[in-house]
Amino acid sequence: MNNDHQEPETRNDYGSDRRSREMPDRRDSTADRRDAVQDERDEAREDDRPLYRKFSLDHVPEQFHFPVPTRFTIQDLNDMLLWAVDNGSSDIDLINGEAPWVQVQGRRYPVGMRGIEHSEMRLLADKVYRGAAASRLAFGKSVNCSHEIVLSRADGSVNRDDRQRFRVNMTAIQVMGQDAVNMTFRALPKIPPTFEQLKVESEIVDNFRQPNGLSVVSGPTGSGKSTLIAAGIHDDLRDPDSHRKWVTIESPIEFVYDHIERKSAFITQSEVPRHLESFEAGVEEAMRRKPEAGLVGECKDVETVTTCLDMASTGHQVVTTTHATDVPQTIRRMVTFFPREERESRCLQMAESLRMIVVQILVPTLDGKRRACREILVFDAIMRERLMETPIEQWPLEVKSMVRQKGQPMIDPIVNLWREKLISPLIWQQYERQA
Image 1: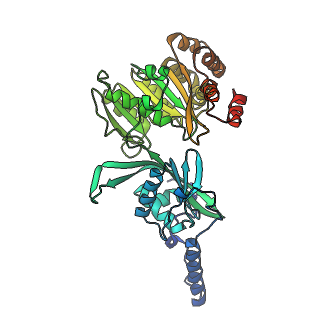
Image 2 (image 1 turned 180 degrees about the vertical axis):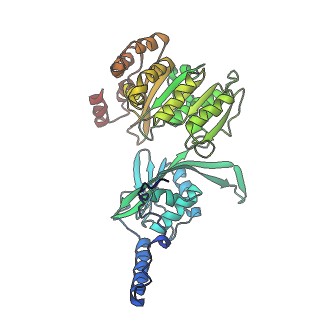
Image 3 (image 1 turned 60 degrees about the vertical axis):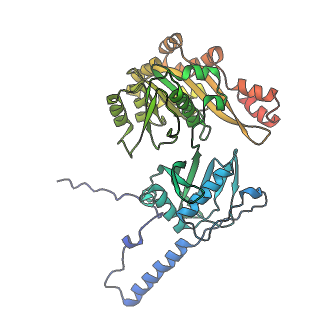
Protein backbone atom coordinates (compact mmCIF):
# COMPACT_ATOMS: atom_id res chain seq x y z
CA MET A 1 0.00 0.00 0.00
CA ASN A 2 1.39 3.38 -1.01
CA ASN A 3 1.29 5.81 1.93
CA ASP A 4 3.22 8.58 0.19
CA HIS A 5 1.73 11.97 0.95
CA GLN A 6 0.48 13.83 -2.13
CA GLU A 7 0.14 17.59 -2.13
CA PRO A 8 -3.29 18.81 -3.26
CA GLU A 9 -3.40 20.38 -6.72
CA THR A 10 -2.88 24.13 -6.53
CA ARG A 11 -5.92 26.11 -7.60
CA ASN A 12 -6.45 29.83 -8.07
CA ASP A 13 -9.69 31.69 -7.37
CA TYR A 14 -10.90 32.02 -10.97
CA GLY A 15 -14.03 29.96 -11.41
CA SER A 16 -13.84 28.57 -7.87
CA ASP A 17 -16.92 26.84 -6.46
CA ARG A 18 -17.81 28.47 -3.15
CA ARG A 19 -19.68 25.34 -2.05
CA SER A 20 -16.34 23.56 -1.70
CA ARG A 21 -15.03 26.05 0.85
CA GLU A 22 -14.55 24.91 4.40
CA MET A 23 -17.74 25.44 6.42
CA PRO A 24 -17.73 26.73 10.02
CA ASP A 25 -17.28 24.11 12.72
CA ARG A 26 -20.61 22.87 14.12
CA ARG A 27 -19.42 23.77 17.60
CA ASP A 28 -19.28 27.47 16.60
CA SER A 29 -21.97 29.68 18.00
CA THR A 30 -24.95 30.77 15.92
CA ALA A 31 -23.52 34.28 15.72
CA ASP A 32 -20.23 32.95 14.38
CA ARG A 33 -22.01 30.95 11.71
CA ARG A 34 -24.12 33.98 10.77
CA ASP A 35 -20.94 36.08 10.45
CA ALA A 36 -19.32 33.43 8.23
CA VAL A 37 -22.32 33.33 5.91
CA GLN A 38 -22.41 37.14 5.73
CA ASP A 39 -18.69 37.24 4.90
CA GLU A 40 -19.28 34.78 2.07
CA ARG A 41 -22.14 36.88 0.70
CA ASP A 42 -19.99 40.01 0.85
CA GLU A 43 -17.25 38.17 -1.00
CA ALA A 44 -19.72 37.04 -3.67
CA ARG A 45 -20.86 40.61 -4.22
CA GLU A 46 -17.25 41.74 -4.41
CA ASP A 47 -16.55 38.92 -6.92
CA ASP A 48 -19.22 40.27 -9.29
CA ARG A 49 -18.31 43.94 -8.88
CA PRO A 50 -16.77 45.33 -12.11
CA LEU A 51 -13.04 45.97 -11.82
CA TYR A 52 -13.10 49.00 -14.08
CA ARG A 53 -9.90 50.42 -15.46
CA LYS A 54 -9.78 54.02 -16.61
CA PHE A 55 -9.77 54.34 -20.38
CA SER A 56 -10.98 56.81 -22.96
CA LEU A 57 -12.57 56.60 -26.40
CA ASP A 58 -11.30 60.07 -27.35
CA HIS A 59 -8.70 58.69 -29.75
CA VAL A 60 -10.79 55.77 -31.00
CA PRO A 61 -12.31 56.12 -34.51
CA GLU A 62 -16.10 56.32 -34.30
CA GLN A 63 -16.50 53.15 -36.35
CA PHE A 64 -15.05 51.19 -33.39
CA HIS A 65 -17.58 52.46 -30.83
CA PHE A 66 -19.63 49.39 -29.91
CA PRO A 67 -22.66 49.60 -27.58
CA VAL A 68 -21.59 47.09 -24.92
CA PRO A 69 -24.74 45.54 -23.39
CA THR A 70 -25.58 45.86 -19.72
CA ARG A 71 -25.12 42.10 -19.37
CA PHE A 72 -23.03 40.04 -21.83
CA THR A 73 -24.64 36.84 -23.10
CA ILE A 74 -23.19 34.44 -25.68
CA GLN A 75 -25.46 36.03 -28.30
CA ASP A 76 -24.12 39.48 -27.42
CA LEU A 77 -20.60 38.12 -27.75
CA ASN A 78 -21.36 36.64 -31.17
CA ASP A 79 -22.91 39.92 -32.31
CA MET A 80 -19.83 41.85 -31.18
CA LEU A 81 -17.42 39.39 -32.83
CA LEU A 82 -19.26 39.65 -36.17
CA TRP A 83 -19.36 43.44 -35.85
CA ALA A 84 -15.60 43.49 -35.19
CA VAL A 85 -14.86 41.30 -38.23
CA ASP A 86 -17.09 43.50 -40.42
CA ASN A 87 -14.99 46.47 -39.30
CA GLY A 88 -11.72 44.83 -40.27
CA SER A 89 -10.62 43.46 -36.91
CA SER A 90 -8.24 40.50 -36.85
CA ASP A 91 -8.18 40.00 -33.06
CA ILE A 92 -10.67 40.64 -30.26
CA ASP A 93 -9.68 40.53 -26.56
CA LEU A 94 -11.92 40.20 -23.51
CA ILE A 95 -10.46 40.84 -20.05
CA ASN A 96 -12.13 41.12 -16.65
CA GLY A 97 -12.85 44.75 -15.84
CA GLU A 98 -11.85 45.98 -19.29
CA ALA A 99 -13.92 47.08 -22.24
CA PRO A 100 -13.51 44.70 -25.20
CA TRP A 101 -10.45 45.44 -27.34
CA VAL A 102 -10.08 45.02 -31.10
CA GLN A 103 -6.96 44.99 -33.27
CA VAL A 104 -7.17 46.43 -36.78
CA GLN A 105 -4.07 46.46 -38.99
CA GLY A 106 -1.86 46.17 -35.91
CA ARG A 107 -3.58 49.01 -34.02
CA ARG A 108 -5.60 48.30 -30.87
CA TYR A 109 -8.74 50.11 -29.70
CA PRO A 110 -11.16 49.74 -26.77
CA VAL A 111 -14.69 49.51 -28.13
CA GLY A 112 -16.97 50.38 -25.22
CA MET A 113 -17.28 52.24 -21.95
CA ARG A 114 -18.11 49.32 -19.65
CA GLY A 115 -15.78 46.76 -18.18
CA ILE A 116 -16.85 43.11 -18.40
CA GLU A 117 -17.67 41.61 -15.03
CA HIS A 118 -16.11 38.52 -13.50
CA SER A 119 -19.33 36.47 -13.61
CA GLU A 120 -19.88 37.41 -17.27
CA MET A 121 -16.39 36.26 -18.22
CA ARG A 122 -16.87 32.95 -16.42
CA LEU A 123 -20.15 32.32 -18.26
CA LEU A 124 -18.73 33.31 -21.66
CA ALA A 125 -15.63 31.15 -21.16
CA ASP A 126 -17.75 28.06 -20.47
CA LYS A 127 -20.10 28.77 -23.39
CA VAL A 128 -17.27 29.29 -25.90
CA TYR A 129 -15.38 26.19 -24.73
CA ARG A 130 -18.61 24.17 -24.55
CA GLY A 131 -17.38 22.78 -21.26
CA ALA A 132 -15.88 23.70 -17.90
CA ALA A 133 -13.32 26.26 -19.11
CA ALA A 134 -13.42 28.05 -15.75
CA SER A 135 -12.34 24.87 -13.98
CA ARG A 136 -9.37 24.38 -16.32
CA LEU A 137 -8.32 27.99 -15.84
CA ALA A 138 -8.66 27.66 -12.06
CA PHE A 139 -6.00 24.92 -12.09
CA GLY A 140 -3.56 26.95 -14.20
CA LYS A 141 -4.36 25.29 -17.53
CA SER A 142 -4.88 27.38 -20.64
CA VAL A 143 -7.70 26.70 -23.08
CA ASN A 144 -7.24 26.55 -26.86
CA CYS A 145 -10.30 25.94 -28.99
CA SER A 146 -12.25 27.20 -31.97
CA HIS A 147 -15.47 29.21 -31.91
CA GLU A 148 -17.89 29.10 -34.80
CA ILE A 149 -20.87 31.37 -35.49
CA VAL A 150 -23.48 30.13 -37.95
CA LEU A 151 -24.80 33.13 -39.86
CA SER A 152 -28.43 33.86 -40.66
CA ARG A 153 -30.05 34.74 -43.96
CA ALA A 154 -31.93 37.98 -44.51
CA ASP A 155 -35.22 36.25 -43.66
CA GLY A 156 -33.82 35.09 -40.31
CA SER A 157 -33.37 31.44 -41.25
CA VAL A 158 -30.09 29.70 -40.45
CA ASN A 159 -27.58 29.10 -43.21
CA ARG A 160 -25.36 26.23 -42.04
CA ASP A 161 -22.99 26.72 -44.98
CA ASP A 162 -22.20 30.30 -43.99
CA ARG A 163 -20.04 30.40 -40.87
CA GLN A 164 -17.53 32.70 -39.23
CA ARG A 165 -14.74 30.90 -37.35
CA PHE A 166 -12.33 32.10 -34.67
CA ARG A 167 -9.29 30.61 -33.04
CA VAL A 168 -9.60 31.12 -29.27
CA ASN A 169 -7.10 31.20 -26.44
CA MET A 170 -8.05 31.60 -22.79
CA THR A 171 -5.36 32.20 -20.18
CA ALA A 172 -5.71 32.91 -16.45
CA ILE A 173 -4.26 36.31 -15.47
CA GLN A 174 -4.36 38.79 -12.59
CA VAL A 175 -6.35 42.03 -12.82
CA MET A 176 -6.14 44.60 -10.01
CA GLY A 177 -5.09 41.96 -7.50
CA GLN A 178 -7.74 39.40 -8.44
CA ASP A 179 -7.62 36.26 -10.57
CA ALA A 180 -9.13 36.86 -14.01
CA VAL A 181 -8.96 35.61 -17.59
CA ASN A 182 -7.93 36.96 -20.98
CA MET A 183 -9.91 35.53 -23.92
CA THR A 184 -8.40 36.23 -27.35
CA PHE A 185 -10.43 35.59 -30.49
CA ARG A 186 -8.53 35.51 -33.80
CA ALA A 187 -10.77 35.81 -36.85
CA LEU A 188 -10.29 33.25 -39.62
CA PRO A 189 -11.37 33.90 -43.22
CA LYS A 190 -14.38 31.88 -44.32
CA ILE A 191 -12.41 30.75 -47.38
CA PRO A 192 -8.59 30.57 -47.23
CA PRO A 193 -6.84 32.91 -49.68
CA THR A 194 -4.70 31.74 -52.57
CA PHE A 195 -0.99 32.27 -53.18
CA GLU A 196 -1.89 34.70 -55.94
CA GLN A 197 -4.05 36.79 -53.60
CA LEU A 198 -1.22 36.91 -51.05
CA LYS A 199 1.35 37.84 -53.75
CA VAL A 200 3.60 34.99 -52.69
CA GLU A 201 7.06 34.70 -54.23
CA SER A 202 7.63 32.14 -56.97
CA GLU A 203 10.21 30.29 -54.84
CA ILE A 204 7.45 29.39 -52.37
CA VAL A 205 4.84 28.61 -55.03
CA ASP A 206 7.23 26.33 -56.94
CA ASN A 207 8.42 24.48 -53.83
CA PHE A 208 5.32 24.27 -51.65
CA ARG A 209 4.20 20.97 -53.15
CA GLN A 210 6.83 18.30 -52.55
CA PRO A 211 6.69 14.51 -52.91
CA ASN A 212 8.09 14.21 -49.38
CA GLY A 213 10.04 16.08 -46.71
CA LEU A 214 9.43 18.91 -44.25
CA SER A 215 8.56 22.57 -44.93
CA VAL A 216 8.35 25.04 -42.03
CA VAL A 217 6.69 28.46 -41.92
CA SER A 218 7.94 30.62 -39.03
CA GLY A 219 7.18 34.05 -37.68
CA PRO A 220 5.84 35.94 -34.66
CA THR A 221 2.34 35.38 -33.34
CA GLY A 222 -0.24 36.85 -35.70
CA SER A 223 2.10 37.15 -38.68
CA GLY A 224 0.01 35.00 -41.02
CA LYS A 225 1.88 31.68 -40.82
CA SER A 226 -1.25 29.54 -40.88
CA THR A 227 -2.77 31.74 -43.58
CA LEU A 228 0.23 31.17 -45.84
CA ILE A 229 0.00 27.39 -45.45
CA ALA A 230 -3.78 27.45 -45.94
CA ALA A 231 -3.26 29.30 -49.22
CA GLY A 232 -0.91 26.57 -50.42
CA ILE A 233 -3.40 23.85 -49.49
CA HIS A 234 -6.18 25.83 -51.19
CA ASP A 235 -4.19 25.94 -54.44
CA ASP A 236 -3.37 22.24 -54.21
CA LEU A 237 -7.01 21.24 -53.70
CA ARG A 238 -7.99 23.19 -56.83
CA ASP A 239 -5.18 21.77 -58.97
CA PRO A 240 -6.56 19.20 -61.47
CA ASP A 241 -3.19 17.44 -61.50
CA SER A 242 -2.69 17.16 -57.74
CA HIS A 243 -4.22 13.72 -56.97
CA ARG A 244 -3.30 13.99 -53.31
CA LYS A 245 -4.89 13.28 -49.98
CA TRP A 246 -4.19 15.79 -47.21
CA VAL A 247 -4.54 15.02 -43.49
CA THR A 248 -4.21 17.65 -40.77
CA ILE A 249 -3.43 17.27 -37.07
CA GLU A 250 -4.22 20.55 -35.34
CA SER A 251 -4.93 21.98 -31.90
CA PRO A 252 -7.35 23.55 -32.63
CA ILE A 253 -8.48 23.31 -36.25
CA GLU A 254 -8.05 26.74 -37.80
CA PHE A 255 -8.87 27.08 -41.50
CA VAL A 256 -11.52 24.86 -43.04
CA TYR A 257 -11.82 24.06 -46.75
CA ASP A 258 -15.53 23.21 -47.03
CA HIS A 259 -16.29 25.75 -49.75
CA ILE A 260 -13.32 25.03 -52.01
CA GLU A 261 -14.03 23.09 -55.19
CA ARG A 262 -11.86 19.97 -55.19
CA LYS A 263 -10.49 18.91 -58.57
CA SER A 264 -8.31 15.89 -57.84
CA ALA A 265 -7.38 16.27 -54.15
CA PHE A 266 -9.21 16.25 -50.82
CA ILE A 267 -8.47 16.96 -47.16
CA THR A 268 -9.49 15.52 -43.77
CA GLN A 269 -8.92 17.48 -40.56
CA SER A 270 -8.50 16.23 -36.97
CA GLU A 271 -8.15 18.15 -33.72
CA VAL A 272 -6.15 17.20 -30.60
CA PRO A 273 -7.63 16.25 -28.13
CA ARG A 274 -11.15 16.46 -29.60
CA HIS A 275 -10.63 13.78 -32.27
CA LEU A 276 -7.19 12.40 -31.42
CA GLU A 277 -5.57 11.70 -28.08
CA SER A 278 -2.21 13.20 -29.08
CA PHE A 279 -0.11 14.30 -32.05
CA GLU A 280 1.78 11.00 -31.90
CA ALA A 281 -1.52 9.11 -32.15
CA GLY A 282 -2.43 11.36 -35.05
CA VAL A 283 0.59 10.24 -37.05
CA GLU A 284 -0.15 6.58 -36.36
CA GLU A 285 -3.71 7.00 -37.59
CA ALA A 286 -2.61 9.12 -40.57
CA MET A 287 -0.21 6.43 -41.76
CA ARG A 288 -3.07 3.93 -41.85
CA ARG A 289 -5.03 6.25 -44.14
CA LYS A 290 -2.29 6.52 -46.79
CA PRO A 291 -2.05 10.29 -47.32
CA GLU A 292 0.37 12.06 -49.63
CA ALA A 293 0.66 15.23 -47.53
CA GLY A 294 0.02 16.37 -43.97
CA LEU A 295 -0.23 19.52 -41.86
CA VAL A 296 0.88 19.53 -38.23
CA GLY A 297 -0.54 22.72 -36.75
CA GLU A 298 2.49 23.94 -34.79
CA CYS A 299 5.91 22.67 -33.70
CA LYS A 300 5.90 23.76 -30.07
CA ASP A 301 7.48 20.86 -28.19
CA VAL A 302 9.38 17.60 -28.66
CA GLU A 303 6.17 15.67 -29.39
CA THR A 304 5.09 17.87 -32.30
CA VAL A 305 8.58 18.12 -33.83
CA THR A 306 8.96 14.34 -33.60
CA THR A 307 5.53 13.96 -35.22
CA CYS A 308 6.65 16.08 -38.18
CA LEU A 309 9.96 14.28 -38.64
CA ASP A 310 8.47 10.79 -38.36
CA MET A 311 5.85 11.62 -40.95
CA ALA A 312 8.32 13.37 -43.29
CA SER A 313 10.87 10.54 -43.10
CA THR A 314 8.31 7.94 -44.19
CA GLY A 315 7.79 9.42 -47.64
CA HIS A 316 5.17 12.10 -46.96
CA GLN A 317 5.18 15.85 -47.38
CA VAL A 318 4.68 17.68 -44.07
CA VAL A 319 4.09 21.40 -43.52
CA THR A 320 4.08 23.02 -40.09
CA THR A 321 4.61 26.31 -38.27
CA THR A 322 6.77 27.53 -35.40
CA HIS A 323 7.64 30.81 -33.73
CA ALA A 324 10.94 32.32 -34.88
CA THR A 325 12.14 35.58 -36.44
CA ASP A 326 14.56 34.23 -39.06
CA VAL A 327 15.67 30.98 -40.69
CA PRO A 328 18.68 30.33 -38.39
CA GLN A 329 16.49 30.85 -35.31
CA THR A 330 13.96 28.40 -36.75
CA ILE A 331 16.68 25.74 -36.94
CA ARG A 332 17.96 26.56 -33.46
CA ARG A 333 14.47 26.41 -31.96
CA MET A 334 13.67 23.01 -33.45
CA VAL A 335 17.03 21.54 -32.45
CA THR A 336 16.72 22.62 -28.82
CA PHE A 337 13.40 20.81 -28.39
CA PHE A 338 15.21 17.45 -28.30
CA PRO A 339 16.90 16.07 -25.18
CA ARG A 340 20.67 15.76 -25.56
CA GLU A 341 20.62 11.97 -25.80
CA GLU A 342 18.35 12.14 -28.86
CA ARG A 343 19.60 15.35 -30.42
CA GLU A 344 22.18 13.97 -32.84
CA SER A 345 19.95 11.30 -34.39
CA ARG A 346 16.95 13.60 -34.59
CA CYS A 347 18.98 16.42 -36.13
CA LEU A 348 20.28 14.11 -38.85
CA GLN A 349 16.69 13.09 -39.50
CA MET A 350 15.79 16.79 -39.76
CA ALA A 351 18.66 17.53 -42.13
CA GLU A 352 17.52 14.72 -44.43
CA SER A 353 13.90 15.91 -44.32
CA LEU A 354 14.16 19.70 -44.74
CA ARG A 355 12.80 21.07 -48.00
CA MET A 356 11.97 24.72 -47.28
CA ILE A 357 11.87 27.27 -44.45
CA VAL A 358 9.87 30.50 -44.81
CA VAL A 359 9.82 33.23 -42.18
CA GLN A 360 7.06 35.82 -42.47
CA ILE A 361 6.55 39.15 -40.70
CA LEU A 362 4.01 41.94 -41.22
CA VAL A 363 5.59 45.37 -41.75
CA PRO A 364 3.48 48.53 -41.05
CA THR A 365 3.06 50.70 -44.15
CA LEU A 366 2.26 54.38 -44.56
CA ASP A 367 -1.35 53.70 -45.56
CA GLY A 368 -2.10 52.29 -42.10
CA LYS A 369 -2.00 48.69 -43.27
CA ARG A 370 0.67 45.98 -43.11
CA ARG A 371 2.61 44.20 -45.83
CA ALA A 372 3.95 40.64 -45.57
CA CYS A 373 7.73 40.29 -45.95
CA ARG A 374 9.40 36.89 -46.14
CA GLU A 375 12.79 35.28 -45.65
CA ILE A 376 13.08 32.14 -47.79
CA LEU A 377 15.48 29.22 -47.96
CA VAL A 378 14.85 26.20 -50.21
CA PHE A 379 17.04 23.19 -49.40
CA ASP A 380 18.38 21.09 -52.28
CA ALA A 381 20.23 17.78 -51.90
CA ILE A 382 23.65 19.46 -51.79
CA MET A 383 22.57 21.84 -49.01
CA ARG A 384 21.09 19.01 -46.97
CA GLU A 385 24.35 17.04 -47.31
CA ARG A 386 26.31 20.12 -46.30
CA LEU A 387 24.15 20.48 -43.19
CA MET A 388 24.67 16.84 -42.21
CA GLU A 389 28.42 17.32 -42.40
CA THR A 390 28.31 20.38 -40.15
CA PRO A 391 28.47 20.04 -36.32
CA ILE A 392 25.00 20.63 -34.89
CA GLU A 393 26.10 23.56 -32.73
CA GLN A 394 27.21 25.36 -35.92
CA TRP A 395 23.97 24.81 -37.82
CA PRO A 396 22.55 28.32 -37.21
CA LEU A 397 25.70 29.96 -38.61
CA GLU A 398 25.78 27.58 -41.55
CA VAL A 399 22.13 28.20 -42.36
CA LYS A 400 22.64 31.97 -42.07
CA SER A 401 25.35 31.66 -44.72
CA MET A 402 23.00 29.59 -46.90
CA VAL A 403 20.31 32.26 -46.72
CA ARG A 404 22.76 34.90 -47.97
CA GLN A 405 24.15 32.68 -50.73
CA LYS A 406 21.10 30.75 -51.92
CA GLY A 407 17.98 32.25 -50.35
CA GLN A 408 16.13 35.51 -49.85
CA PRO A 409 17.14 37.42 -46.68
CA MET A 410 14.37 39.29 -44.86
CA ILE A 411 15.95 42.65 -45.61
CA ASP A 412 15.42 42.25 -49.38
CA PRO A 413 11.60 42.71 -49.46
CA ILE A 414 11.88 45.46 -46.82
CA VAL A 415 14.37 47.32 -49.04
CA ASN A 416 11.81 47.09 -51.84
CA LEU A 417 9.13 48.65 -49.60
CA TRP A 418 11.54 51.46 -48.70
CA ARG A 419 12.43 52.14 -52.31
CA GLU A 420 8.74 52.23 -53.24
CA LYS A 421 8.21 54.76 -50.39
CA LEU A 422 5.65 52.51 -48.68
CA ILE A 423 7.20 52.55 -45.19
CA SER A 424 8.29 55.36 -42.90
CA PRO A 425 11.95 56.24 -42.20
CA LEU A 426 11.48 55.03 -38.60
CA ILE A 427 10.28 51.58 -39.72
CA TRP A 428 13.11 51.35 -42.27
CA GLN A 429 15.74 52.22 -39.64
CA GLN A 430 14.39 49.57 -37.26
CA TYR A 431 14.81 46.78 -39.81
CA GLU A 432 18.03 48.15 -41.32
CA ARG A 433 19.72 47.94 -37.90
CA GLN A 434 18.64 44.29 -37.55
CA ALA A 435 19.97 43.25 -40.97
